[in-house]
Structures are given as structure tokens and as C-alpha cells.
Length: 79
Image (cartoon, rainbow, N blue to C red; front, side):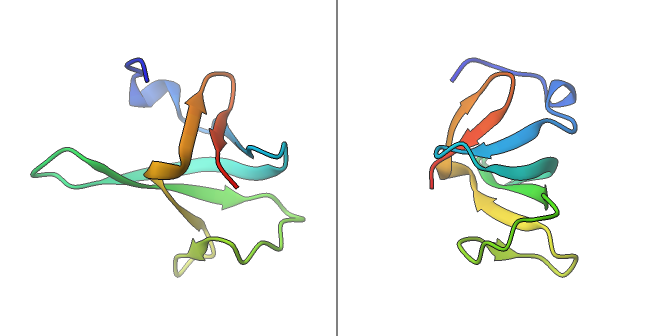
């Protein structure tokens, strides 16, 4: 993946590889020592009833960064 500044990811839509709108990017978690990315945290779409991903205490989706396939107009994650 090419380098993208975090500020350019703010509130970017997150889509499944099947075209389903999962929600809007809320945050990204990472290991501060190694710099490896852990999760993209997604504010879920209103109609999303997926149990495929874990959720945090606020109901946000915790999608492992290893499932990110593309970052362009949207963030695409494998489903």
C-alpha cells in the first residue's frame, strides 16, 4: 500500500469487499513500539447488524488491519 497521511483518512467510508457499507472510520489503533497497525475502528452504519467483527465498549466495529485491502475513495476490508 502507498503511504497515506492519517489526516486524509478522517471520516472515510469503510466498505466490505462485497460492497456493503460498514460505516465510517473513527480511529486506528497501533503498537507504539513497533508501529504496526492493529485495528481500524469503525462507527457502524445504522442498518449494520453484523456480528462478524468484535465491538468496543461504544459499539464501534474493531476490524483487524490485516483485513484492509485498499484505501482510496473508501477503505475496503475483506469479508
